[in-house]
Amino acid sequence: MAKKPSTVFFCTECGNETSKWMGQCPACKAWNTLVEEKVSPTTGGKTVRRSSNAEAVHLSEINMDKEIRMSTGILEMDRVLGGGIVQGSLTLVGGDPGIGKSTLLLQMCENLARENHKVLYVSGEESLRQIKLRADRIGDFNDNLLLMCENNLTDIEAVIKKEKPETVIIDSIQTMVNEEITSSAGSVSQVRESTAVLLSIAKGLGTAIFIVGHVTKEGTVAGPRVLEHMVDTVLYFEGDRYASYRILRGVKNRFGSTNEIGVFEMTEKGLTQVPNPSEYMLNGRPLNASGNCVACSMEGTRPILVEIQALVTQSNLGIPRRAAVGTDGGRVNLLMAVLEKRLGMHISGYDAYINIAGGMKMTEPAIDLGIVMAIASSFRERAIGDDMVVFGEVGLSGEVRAVSNADQRVAEAAKLGFKTAVVPKVCLERIGTIDGIKIIGVSNLTEAIELV
Ligand code: TYD
Ligand code: MG
Image (cartoon, rainbow, N blue to C red; front, side):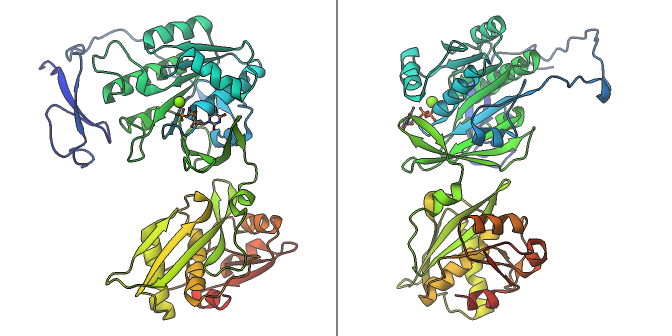
């Protein structure tokens, strides 16, 4: 077998490895994503035969009597994790630089330490003094928290084996170095191998490990997506840097449901939880304004009400301008085509701007009806009642289709004082009646638009 070359090329998108440079990655077909990296030769392709004492076990033999979940002390975070930190799990926390990943994890450490769990916070980015400065802003820490500034994984592993913490934070994976790999910190192979080492520590010692990963411009964790396959849980911490709220979103979770979100607000004393995001998102909305419509989207198991704003104006361009902030632009174009064709609303010559107020990003089809109503309201310059909430998926023939958890959505609207809910007709039976809110079922767009 030929010896491995000492230089290989990695795709920064998918982590695919090739021996020569190419303009396009042969695996994921992305352009200009291959980067050169030096790797030290492995065993040279020789497989060492050894006698094995591996064994398989019966499901019933697995001992489960010890509680394997630890609460982070942050309710919003527990929810995203599926009920707490699982022993021996590897969690990746991704997000833009400066969004608050270190702050969130340090706050989690504070809570864990208070509950008598031993935690180790390893920073490869900041000095001990810098961490102390941040810690002082957040709260009181006790002696169960150990800090360490280190980049070398071998040393980190030794400390973990010596101190035996229950939870370890690695901030960030891009600064970690595995000495066996010759390429520099932050490179694809380094990030991948470092994660593999951490994975074996987590599974071997039963330590829960959180790794912080910075996100690239394109929105994926810097380095290969391979990382997402290796870890048990992937959380993204997102939000507008200029707005104060932050959303922790679960995109992969081997121990719970995904798409669950936790909402936080960044204050001068660290992050605080936002237990009722709908109230927060609807705060200060203009009343009696045309083009505004309150819709309801399910984020994980939680219904969230948001205001959808539309501005439809006569275009003086050959091709009208369409822009969507916080939702899918293609979907908006599709819905406008449905309005034009099925309702005879002549909006093809109009510019349209759609915005989800509050900076939330929502792509659930259940907000379709809200987008359509907002567009129609702006086009006709007639306001939708301030106490009305709408949801439903819109089909290409202008029909309003069923959505999941309709009853929960209406209940949330009723809780916030809304008086009317416009829902898909097929969902009426499931919802039944809910005190204090009038429920109107619509089967197509014509019926819905009449309410504007
Ligand atoms: P940080 O956790 O360092 O971000 P990351 O680790 O994701 O790069 O958060 C840094 C930002 O948070 C910084 O702009 C300052 C702000 N911040 C506050 O507003 N209040 C606070 O109490 C703390 C600790 C940070
Ligand atoms: Mg940080």
